[in-house]
Image (tube, rainbow over all chains, first blue to last red):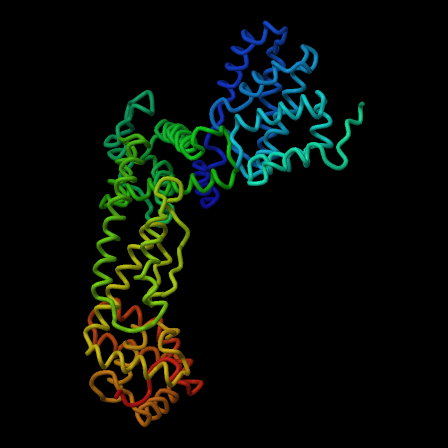
Length: 174
Length: 331
């Protein structure tokens, strides 16, 4: 009993319960972003913002990562809001999927790519190769995407286009 | 009488002490996890208010965010949990280093009650920096007292290993270090220590060992070590054992057979082996430890013999005393 009590006290200062991410700041930033994206007809409701905030937490858990402050979602949202494939109907779901992909890829490449570069590459891939299909990126292309980013970041950057255009890449919807 | 403060955060430490007394249970405080165990114990004994404890957690979160931002060079808002964990342990190590400067647990607890985590962290960083300087001067001292012998592992620590360690030492993100194993080990390990304290203890041990060995004639020590290499089929640059341990054991066993200095001749070795074999293991240990205490008053030698006695017991039982000391005439 006494030892359990002591254990409880010791576990109170622990990396798992040190609050690094700030969901309140995230929600605040997404709300503010609505003011910018509204011009393109894109708007996140309170319900969608709450759901996205939960998605970030889940994505972080799944990819074994820790985030600080408001995190990357507002930056990702701003970048993707300018995509021609993002519409008011799919805006929230695209963000939901892309935040998952973002953390998965970031972990897979051992953080060797900066947030901004990764977002740029993700958007490029999403628009030019997946032709606006998040399902393609998520279900089929994630390994290819990781290879592409590794080449882009590594010494073999000249081969990056090979992965893009190689072997079997065909736009199945074409 | 219970203090009459309405908000627990307003209760000063002195009032808490007056009411609860000084109730820290030292057994619950662990030096290798000092900040956490001390603050937890403080809270458990009501020497730290719940409000202050919550503040500490909040301050830790804020400071960790700043450190992580520095770590990623502000280029990433997230990092892998393992990396974050290392940074967190490093951060706690830094807090521990600050608290080690206090004379008692109570004064350390008072300091964290009255100062923010940011202040404690800054103090920790300056203590670490100070310890790095201490290590550099200890290294210079150890180098000056270096034993003149060709052993590769021993010389490697002076010829770059320690300097390399200091160069790579990262007080911000990896202050706790891993317990870096140098190619040469001292008899008394420094494994209970982490980070820069590990190096400091290692150097202190090394200086003690060098001083001991240098108290004997340099030529005799060299001949002893060369002799050890020859009888054990080792290259002169690959002794394979700690220099101090051979010198200490030779001197103690030589004394047991009635010789001054370091020499243990074959007949002496045979005689002492026979005598010791008659005794149970614990008595052999006792004989060795008592003799060491009688010969050398320093605690390091006594501690070393407690460790080395086990090797002597094994060597005596297997009739291979020459594996741990040099048996023969020192030319």
